[in-house]
Image (cartoon, rainbow, N blue to C red; front, top):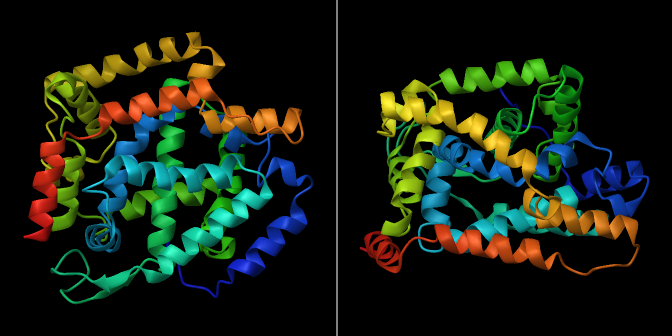
Length: 330
């Protein structure tokens, strides 16, 4: 299925979402949604590398990130800003979700430029825009597919009914990013078909900036973390197609396959023993407090502290950042 462009009016979309919302404190979804059930789990971050690489395998996205983003020089800052908007839309109240949708739309309006190589179906000089609905939906699709994949591996299987509900709820999220629901696959089965077709198409390929950014994102931040990075690279590689693994030059031998196969049962066992403050994102913990205690805005200090510690652990070393900044400026 091709995501055909359609007229999109963000303010009209926001008015429609507000009209359908029973309690603005719940936000777009609320505690009864499958979206909260799945997206509250910190473990779904294990799919972040896969989602990022699949997004970068779309030439529009790879060149936009390369030309407009500060990811290579401030990856942790970029991560924070991105997920602030994502979690505001998922777990925030209705006002927070609307503000983030407007900010993201304003940023995307400024992101456009040329593809600087012949790649996939595009020739050098082809112009991209961050408001392209096909590219926006591909970003969205990688998040949906990766979250479901990791959740079912690390937490437990969802029923076919809940998978359908999760996808249907995600179409509302896609509309906040600029993709009207009427242009997207109408069922989870059609979504899976779309995703498989995209992976097999020439559209999804490792362009020059995709390969460079992938190499940067998957290198160890410090020597101390090299074993952890190698493990995470293997888990990520296991969730990619064989073609993308080859194009990105990701090792996938007997050792990586055995490690990946053994990892998921171990992760499942750990997740089931974690208390909520360690298992769930702080944004979810704060959202539940907001709903139970109207007007409460006290932060989840434990969760935020652990989140900051984890982000600092994956921050590339200063010499790596300096080399990348010099390469981009030179």
